[in-house]
Image 1: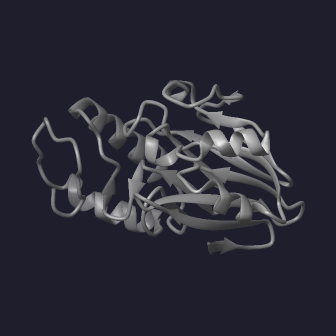
Image 2: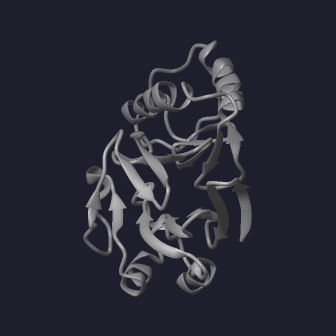
Length: 213
């Protein structure tokens, strides 16, 4: 477990989980110790250990891919707290979600609020969660590029999500992705500017890198 961010209002911890190096995040209100677990990749016992000392209130899913939900069923059964997803990703899960959210919704966490951004492209129901000057971006955007897409239409969709909802945020906002290290909106905007300055195959999709694709 690594503390990625901490201020008077909120703390964000990251746990990198095998076998795919998927990040799980624990977001905790510093005032009430109410917490939310973002994604449940694997090793439910380790995730439970790291939730100790907090008051777990939600499991939030950025999307429904298997490398983000491996521990979901066991954690949900043990914690007995609401599972929160977007309706478009409510299928292919080991259980029925308790709460569906959409773009612009807010989730109260003690004295803090998490804003929900619907950012389709990687999956139809991909979500990002913004709190204070931090955003957990799932597999929508990483340092160096967008999340993997499975069709040209999905790639155009993820570009619209990124340009319309992420690159419009303040330069110094930190983005915490579903794999790997964080980046900033400023860095993402600079890298995307390089990508958008070039022409591309209209069928482009899959694994795309801003600086070399």
